Length: 356
Image 1 (cartoon, rainbow, N blue to C red):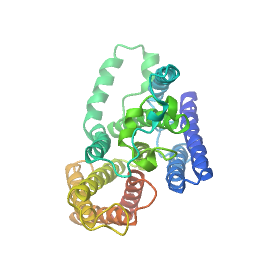
Image 2: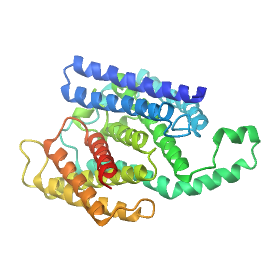
Image 3: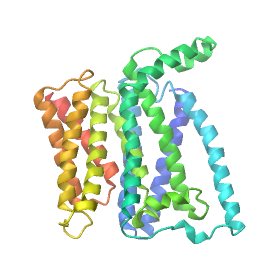
Image 4: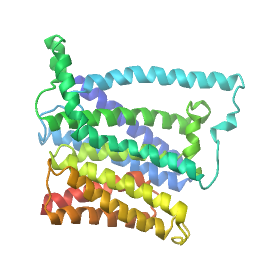
């Protein structure tokens, strides 16, 4: 494993350790919901990275030195540029506070137990960004490889060899997706860690408007759970080509559309509450139905990459939809964005390897 790979692994593990520290703080302050959610995020992040490294270095499941390769240099470049820029934003926020331009109480813009509908819609729309993974895996990734190949013709050979753009297109798109999701996760984690540990100098206070009351303190934001959920399943199952990426994209689509439809339908027309939680049976049924059909749609659209028989085409989305319904009904303290993605992809992969 080369130096850049080790450096990237060190950065990712550092974030895992920081998440464990935040988890400890939540436990210390008796915020048990935040403790459970943060612990799940930290463990899944650390375990997925570790298993990925073991699969590559011990079992030689891939010829790459680390899953991000050949984008190691680009990721290090992102880190070098991002951290100073983010520090400038934090410093500017600190200067504003010292000059009393902003009231320090503004770190908690809203404290409503239930978000206004428009903010809930904004919140769900941000999740749709994860659908870009599908396009990078199966459409844009192909075009980007061609662009890289053309550009590298003008770069000296010793530099072009760093990227090694040739070879299996699915391996290239896998590396591309890990790179893009990885840098997104680094950016999001950095911002959320500052929001939790130093809220006064958090430079993105407007983001607090789409956070629920329980997410304003020591609990990681839903975008972090989404990022870790996507990143972990890509690391764990993306190496198994081509079925891994197909199942990853299916689980992401089902999770996003199922969760979004359940929330919005429950908010707009839901009447019958599930126990004493803020969810309704109407929303639950809507989430199950929409996730089922979105799963069938994705598997059908990606049939040229990996084709399931009619039983698999129906059974996998059906099982996934039932899991989404069950998790939604149980209402775990763990964020849906993490539990849906991780549980669905793991079960899909197990079923597919065992029976299809």
